[in-house]
Image (cartoon, rainbow, N blue to C red; front, side, top):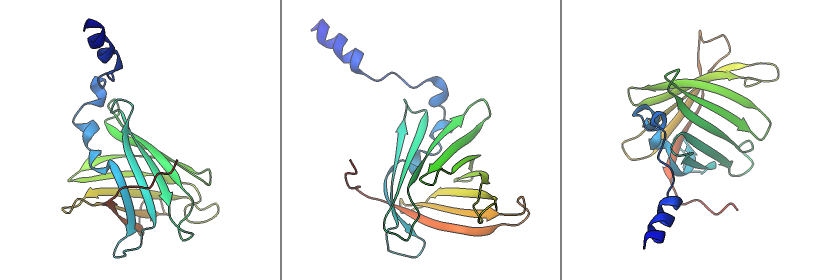
Length: 172
């Protein structure tokens, strides 16, 4: 019996480090899940998205998987709460080789992260991109973005997506 108890203890995952189990580190947990993604007002699924809490709760990993030819190739992100800087940080990498570093925080029920996105507005035309995530009353998550090509003086809408919980296909 003692061997069984020791084996079970050895197999249990380690507890989350203190910095990964703070209230702030759970602010974005509403985004964790398996999702079908649709543009605002449309019923067509444009992507599947798998959002996982990983690494003993220290990070959120996104796997963005587009559906059809209308949407650019896939990508993903790794997000975490940086307790030293007291902000959320995300690195997005996509199938074109683009990497974007974004940071921000959670305020009034909305997670907002912002960063410079190379070539976002066209070849050699970078833009500041600000993405917002909000849990809706019906359980969906709204993700919308704005972009600015003048250093944040003015903003234009970029996209507006709704994430609806779904059982994702097996992509293995």
